[in-house]
Amino acid sequence: MRVIERAVELSATLDEQRSAGRTVGFVPTMGALHDGHASLIERAAVECDTVAVSIFVNPLQFVPGEDLAEYPRDLGADLVVAEKAGAAVVFAPTATEMFPDASRTTVHVAGLGDVLEGASRPGHFDGVATAVTKLLALAGRSRSYFGEKDFQQLVVVGRLVADLSLPVEVVACPTVRGSDGVALSSRNRYLSVDEREAAAVLHRALRAGAACVRAGERDPGEVVDLVSAVVEAEPLVTLDYAAVVDPATLATPRTLAGELRLVLGARVGATRLIDNVAVEVPR
Ligand code: PAF
Image 1 (cartoon, protein in one colour):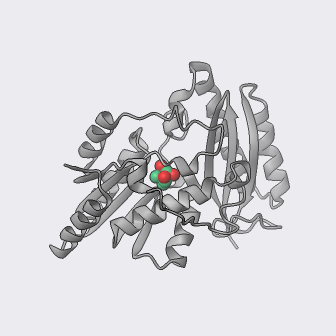
Image 2 (cartoon, helix red, strand yellow):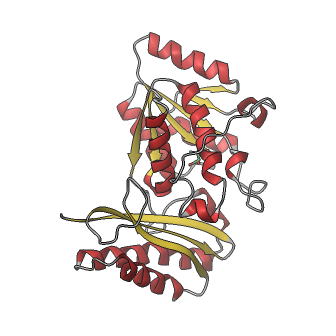
Image 3 (cartoon, protein in one colour):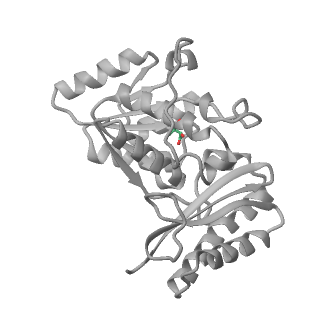
């Protein structure tokens, strides 16, 4: 496996692969790789000839007061996971390599990046969109793999790829969960034993919300009230938001119909976690 720090070298390496007739799969990450990341890399390795993984803790997507300094960084361990899962190339740039001092461009995906998680973390999705645009531009023509766990990110990335005509196919991959239902996340390692146990309420609440939609509830407010009540019964968890949204627009429909996503953001102790599930109401 080749480890690359320079942006131009990543582009040149992947161009060489394409010139040799090989397809490229690209998996952008912030490192601290877990089985969820491994599942993205493994899928890319099944579907593409050469898989590149980026490992970059993107400072632009942390809002003031967040865990940028504490975010887990262990390149050695990440390289082992990436190689085992099938990566041929790892791009691990420094912050100045990614964003030299002269960088002045911000990518803003209007509407989609300002709601839900974006309302609680102003500027977060500008940071994500700016970094992802640059990474996808460097990777070039490829299939790029994103987890559904970060559902709003997936929607934001899909939209910027379409709007900017990037030569990238965005591939959405299912959330990987622990046996307790907790969605795998690099931030789970911040949780104490009690907090980890409490975090299981998030998926439980989403499942209860989805079950109530399936049982015939069509009022999004009622579904959100149910999800909130389940979460709020767990004293270690503070709900930030819960919503039922249209998966394309992230807006809440007046009446529930068609494909929907139940999404939520919450604090478990001091750790911010997000989760979501899909539910469909046949039209
Ligand atoms: O999901 C992540 O790890 C990050 O938000 C991403 C997509 C790598 C952008 O920094």
